[in-house]
Image 1 (cartoon, rainbow, N blue to C red):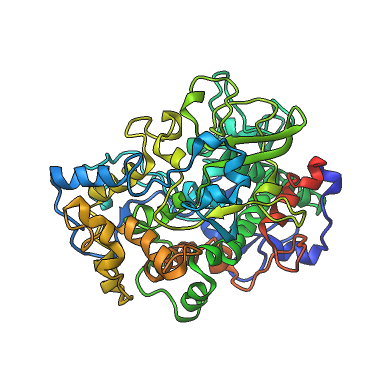
Image 2: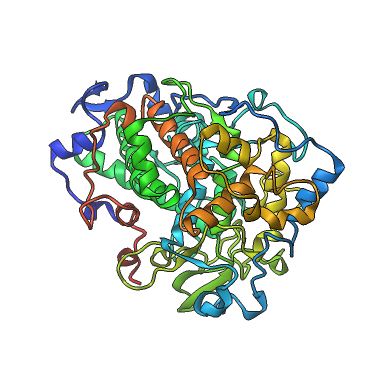
Length: 518
């Protein structure tokens, strides 16, 4: 929203929002907090440097590598294979949304809205980026660099900061992030060839994740205006306070909205009450575990719909519907699918489709189960960070189990003393003839566990605990997070329903339906 429409906060509430209090170093002139370990926060240097990957469990791999095992993984993840929901794409993107009969093999999740997927993808890009390992080639996690900070600190947005990475920032107001538009609404900055100018190139893989990135850019810029309206003037102090305001509200959403949706409220409450049992980094020593990075958190791929309504009136006054990916659109300057890397007037997100603003327009996610939407089995190369085949996303996920030598779902369940799935629950894997029904790739096991135990509404006991413990571990081990620095903190920005939600985040950013007049 414009600066003059930014909600006013009392000085006391504002100071609480940006983290003044115990464990913080005061900044003049108002005592607005900046954590000691991020003393160079004005330059965007994260307190947790990119670390190596690591493991939670020291367990045997799910299988010994062999041509037969690799072939079985490729077979399991191939187009038309066991994981393919076989969506009738010939019905078109609109019918796949509005006709329930077309979703029988790929059911909707009534407890998630469509935006949950892309907020989850945004989180993934903020905490993990493996740019060096190769599919199906054994790699030591501890010797492999994670090119994202292992903290939920928005380094995927801020990059190295306004001094070291100036291209991300507004040339006329360098504490604000650069934002452009080539259509009806905002777009990420782009070069002449359409490539996004963002700290993490994956945040332009599809239109929804690019729109999410834009929302964070606008939120920060509005936070800058709010900070200045409370008398903060020096650039370093303004940037530090605005970044803190943005980051802590983001972290609140992870813990209080996203994580209960993904892992279940009971699991989140249990870990908060009893503590983490398996992922236990010390303060300032977080690492990215491969059991999370590949084996569990890729559950989000099962939540993707085959098609979406991007907005309600952007396509010459009509809604813009599109498949998430459609290879027939390769090479188009304004493709009819929702891939990233392009700019056109209709290519923006109307968030009322993705989060519930109470207007009846929101659409649901897909369930977490062993059926993935068919467009994910033939990705455009531009949607793959390494730009190489295979283009079937499930094959890539499964082959990465050989890369990291991941344990089976059964062995992780035993190590966690969690209930095991019965072999009969996995008997569809017997036809692969390599024993996967007894020693199951962790990612497939987690999807099946969610399907069997939780009806696909959220993760089961193995997947849910790993995800919950890692998210809480990343927050609790980061001395700059609100959970470590000021655990009693609560958001002070306006909230519709008494607790700050994603809809409130988008409203403060000025990308909500009311701001767009839709």
